[in-house]
Image 1 (cartoon, rainbow, N blue to C red):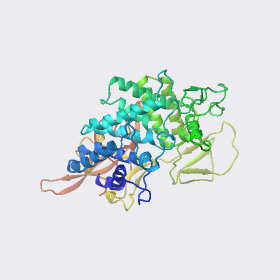
Image 2 (image 1 turned 45 degrees about the vertical axis):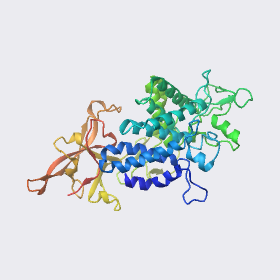
Image 3 (image 1 turned 120 degrees about the horizontal axis):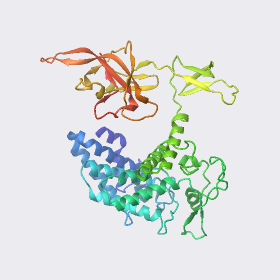
Image 4 (image 1 turned 60 degrees about the vertical axis):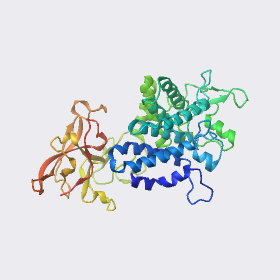
Length: 466
C-alpha cells in the first residue's frame, strides 16, 4: 500500500485537498483527482485487514484524507476541491465534462467500504448523505414527480447509489430515494427534451420520436438532450458524437455498444443492479442485448502466431495477417449471406514474464490460444499451499483437455462443463530437517476468467519453475 500511495501521488493530492493550490504551482490538479483519493480510501479499506503491520500508517492516511474532504464541504452539502479552488466555475454548470458526479460516486463507494469493513466514520457517512440530498434537490424529481432532465457525464454515481442502497448504512426511505435517483439517471440519459415555456427555471417535458416505426438508430429525434441544453446555456458548439456519453438514445432503444468503453461498462453495471432491484425484465433484456453486442462485435484482440485458418463459406482465404490485434484481409467483394470463419489454434503455450517484473523472475504463466490460464485451490485439495507448486522451466511437454463444472451458468455449457487443461508438474516437499525435493504431481488449469466461482480458495497465474 505504501508503494501504491507513492505511485498515486497521494501526498500531492492531500495537499490539494487543503485548498492551498495556486496557479503556477508545480503540480496542477485535474478535475478527477479527488476521486483518486476516495479510490485509495476504498482500496485501503479492503487491504487493512490483510496488512496489520502497516495498519497504523494506512489508517492515518485514510483519516487525514477523510478529514480534508469534510473540511471542503460547503453549507449546502457540496464537495469538490477542483471547482472550488482551481476552475472556480459555477457548480453543476457542466455535468458532461466536470466530473463532479463521478467524484461523488467514488466518494460514495469509499464511504460504503470504510464504514462496512473497518472503522465506522459516522461524520463521513453524514457528509456524503448531505451531498446526495443536494443532488436530489438539484437533479431529482420535482414535487409533481417530473424529472428535471439532468444526468452525470460519467456513469459512476448511478452504480454507487445502488451500492449504497444495498448496504446496511441507509434506512428504507433512503433506499427508495437513492434507487429512484439512480433510475432517473440511468433512464433519462439519451432522452430528448424541450423546454415547456421560456422561463429558465420551469420543468422540462418529454418529446418522443417523430416516426416510431423508423430504425431507432437512424431516425431523427425532436428537441435536445440535457447536455445540449447545458451547452447552449453556457455557450459552445453542438456535440458531434452523442454516443461518446451514451446519450444518442435511451438505454432501452440502443441497439449497439457504442461510446466510451469505461462509462459504458459502468452504465450497464448500474442498469443490471437496477433491473435486479426493480425486477425489470425489459431493462435487463436491454442490458443483455448491449452486452452481447459488445462481446460478439466489439472485441478485436486476435493473437499472432501460426495455425490460424480463415475461410469464406468453407473455402480458405489467403493472404491474411494479424497485426496489433486486428485481422487484415485483402479487399474483395462479398455477397449477402456469406460467412467468414476464423479458426484459432488452442494450443497450450508458456508465457515468459517481462524481465523488469522482478516478482515473476523464474516463473511462467500459461495460455490456451488467447485464453489465460490459472490454477485454483479447489482443483488441488491435497495441496495445502499453492505456492509449493512448480512447473518445468521449459513449459509442458504435453497437456490434456478436461471438463469441469464452473459453478455458474454461463450459457452453452450444458452438463459437460467448461474446458480446462491438465499437465504434469511438481510440488515442493520438506523433510524434518528442512531439506526440499520436488515430487511430481498433476496440475489442473482453468480459464482465468472463471476463477472464484466454486467457493473461497487460492489462485495462482505465475508459477515458479524447476
